[in-house]
Length: 101
Image (cartoon, rainbow, N blue to C red; front, side):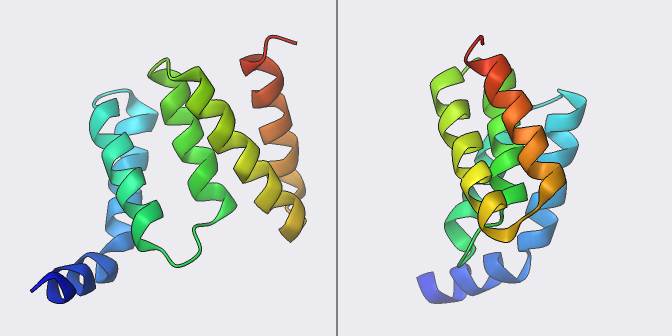
């Protein structure tokens, strides 16, 4: 049964990402956005830099600063590995603000 449920969740993973982004960007239900983003991270074989970036932003909005820093730092690591210049710049800006430097 668990395998069937996991398979169904994985088939709908992009829907969860879209829903999480909707809630987070509109600041309407940050707790739901966080849960959906965590589900996406758990279900994806290799979550993307963008996934961790969005997760970090949600955590920042919720006041979970240390967790936000961890998520954004991991996004930065993945961004550097993939040479995603825009996301590298964005992550560095967010980290600077989160760390108060």
